[in-house]
Image 1 (cartoon, rainbow, N blue to C red):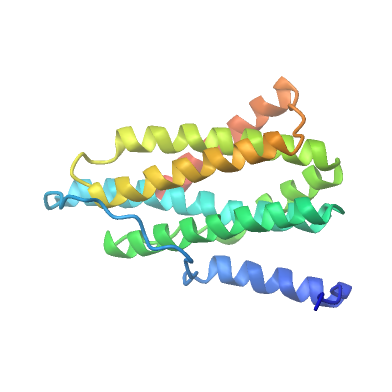
Image 2: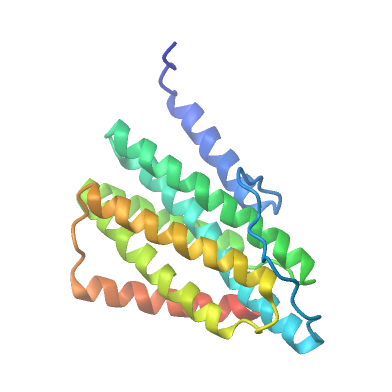
Length: 213
């Protein structure tokens, strides 16, 4: 049986529910959390604080991903593309849950600015979606490529003994690459260089701030 289309009010309520789930610190993963085959050494206090700050940055990225995919799914009129966004958002929910759990294990907290990050990412996702599906997909490709590079840098910066965080970040990196490839195959339009530069600058501000806040 096909589902009836959602009314405007239903869509607003669904978006509000999605935002609250992303921000309340208790997302549910569909996949098991990646774990290392080896048990790493005990982290000292400095290593634990550093790992916790890096995982907070990764968690912020997943909060933003929830907002972006939600906004892009809302703006497209292509049902197949909407399902693609929703599938990717499901994997990003796994990432959100894994990083939230790892934050707790490290004794770290989520970013105090998560509501701001979510709102900003949602607004950007709406703008990208309003520009058309090809541009929206191009924005997604550039975002995921930047996230890939960011996660690669975290694999270099995480304490060598933090195998638990490394396992999570490594799987996230694989998933983000898959999202970018899927968007390219769906007809993404390459963004102009100035737009990509602005996106990188904004991401740098966010990741630097989230490390501390």
